[in-house]
Amino acid sequence: METLEVVGIAVGALVVGAGGAYAAVRLGRSPTAGSAIDSSRAQDEIRQAEARGQELVEKSRRDAEQIVREAELRARDEAFRRREEANRELETQRNEVRELERRVEKREDAAEQRHKELARKERHQDAIQKKLSERKELLEKKSTQLEELITEETKKLHDITGLSRDDAQRMLLEKIERELAEELAARIRQHEDRIKQTAEAKAREILATSIQRYASEHTASSTVSTVDIPSDDMKGRIIGREGRNIRTFEKCTGVDVIVDDTPGVVIVSAFDNIRRETARLALTKLILDGRIHPTRIEEVVAETQQEMERHIMELGKTAVLDADVPMPHEKIVHLLGRLRFRTSYSQNVLQHSVEVAHLCGLMASELGLQPQLARRCGLLHDVGKAADHEMEGGHPKIGAELARRYGETSKEVLHAIAGHHDDVTVDNIYTVLVSAADAISASRPGARRETLEKYVKRLELLEAVACGFPGVEQAFAIQAGRELRVIANSSRTSDADAVKICRDIARAIEQQLDYPGEIKVTVIRESRSVEVAK
Image (cartoon, rainbow, N blue to C red; front, top):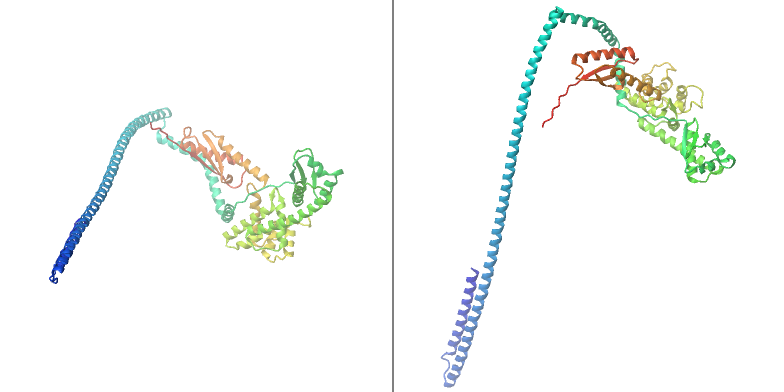
């Protein structure tokens, strides 16, 4: 269409040029020339006009040809461009068709692979089914043979004993009843006692719940501390000329410094844990500083004592925050911090106090009392141990007096401090809770070294008794020794043997061991069948 338009424009230009030339000729032949001179002039002008018209026509023709050639070139370019676009679109469509063909081929391969896998699984399933059928037939055959053997052996037993099946069963039951009569009577007595002790069982339940909800770690302290030294030459500097350095250090700290042949360490000994810890820190600073002389020793010891006082206050505040109680007087906080360096039967007193506080709070929650007040009673119940070496009397009395002196106004707290060891008449429920929590914390497994050793030994004896019976593979004491799990060999014992072993182990424990409460014995006999598919 564009080419035709261009050609039309060229033809129009040619017509216009010709028309202009014709107009010019016609103008030159106008009748206004009257004379011969004018006629000659007119002819010249006509000839010039015809020449100009001829030039215009020729120019218009050339322009038209040029326009036609340009139009043809543009038309060719346009046709080439459209052909290229058509080729690109065709190539794109061909690529899409090839991609679709590849996808179809891939899906066909996957479908064929799945078909082969299904065929293989079907063959495997048929093989398994065949094996199962063969095993089933074999088991049925063996079961039939076993029944025949049992019938035959039963008939032989009847012929030998002269008893029928009912008579033998009756005699066996009578014998078992006689053996179990004594045990049955003991069980009846146990149930009667259990009914009478309902209140005690409820109390134990509350205590057990509280213990399960709270768990605490335990660390043991000693009366000596060791200080590492960079070399044995430092021992001479610690002792000083004629022993003046070590005498000054022992005088300022109140501890004994032992410098012996042990390589790389110096021993600090004292029964007062606070003094021992202060001396250890001061001696460590002096060794790092390198300047060891009486004046420097006095300065470092005084500085360390101030740091220890701040550390004790931080320990007391941390204990109060752990127990989740309102902050008491700073003197009481200081006494609580001092308990961190006091032990009772190798049990840390501050950790014991926090543990008692949590146990009291848990038991108070179970009983519908005030948990925060109970925790405060438990936290402060041993505060007197921080000053019992400085004041006369037992730690309950000293603790109550100190708490009253430093602003403790709660009667429940003061009574719990004074009466948790029954030093006064117990007429307050919170004092009872503190006494119970104190006993739990002190007697639980792992709280004290002696108790832990006895506890582990009792568990070992319990497992040893069970492992001494034939057919027992393993025995495990669980639930803090209140239950014994016994694993019996399934190939050497039957279900009836497991019942007998369980009863025999319970009787052996009753006769050979001393233990609190009851021990539940559970015998587990498990059969497992294992096959390997080839």
